[in-house]
Amino acid sequence: MYNEKNDAPLRIALTKGRLEKNTIALFEEHGVDCANLRDKGRKLVFPLDFGNSIVAEVLLVKPYDVITYVEHGFCDLGIVGKDTIMEHGKSFYEVADLGFGKCRMALAAKAEYLQNPEQFYHGYGKKVIATKFENIAREFFAGKQKDIEIIKIEGSVEIAPLLGFADGIVDIVETGTTLKENGLEVLENICEISARLIVNIASMKMKNNKIDSVIKKLGL
Ligand code: PRP
Image 1 (spheres, rainbow, N blue to C red):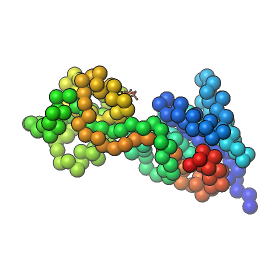
Image 2 (image 1 turned 60 degrees about the horizontal axis):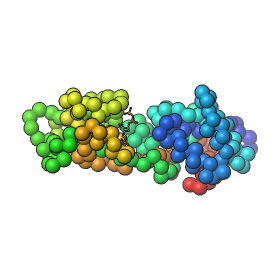
Image 3 (image 1 turned 120 degrees about the vertical axis):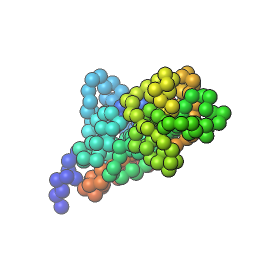
Image 4 (image 1 turned 180 degrees about the horizontal axis):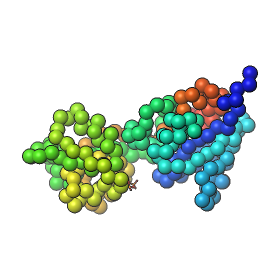
């Protein structure tokens, strides 16, 4: 039976930057030629041959946009960090943990609090937390019944406690170098993070064969 949607090309949104190198490595390890992605210049869309007559259109975009494209069905598949999924994700299938882009989400504050982390919550007035991950922070503190104010900062959040604008941060810790070089320490781990493969809900039905084929091709 003719199925128009199923005959449309498969579209995949990839996170540019941090996860890009590992994503290309995963694809190449499973025989997907990524020469055009490696030599991308200023191009933003790339055809990638996943075998089985599947040539997907691959987009390199910012993390939050991977979620937007997949949720709205502009893309069928996406590769994005669990941090972005937790912060912004609503409705799609999360089908695989890709095992790279590993880091953790943590509450960090000035190193002096490490001696006695409980001290962090003591004292008068509310504690101010600077973070790019408002929703994750809000959920983390919700169960603690502490007086917390969460302030959204777009990047380099370590500056906030360093200069006294905030008491702590909720942020990604990978090597720990950024914290260390700014006199901060992890007080509490919130969760482990890694890259995930996500699939649009309708695409999973309409383009099941192609999606299955790509997932198998990647050894997932
Ligand atoms: C992330 C995160 C930390 C840093 C942690 O920032 O927000 O600042 O990486 O990495 P580390 O533990 O290996 O030092 P990113 O580089 O993504 O940029 P940003 O600060 O502009 O968000």
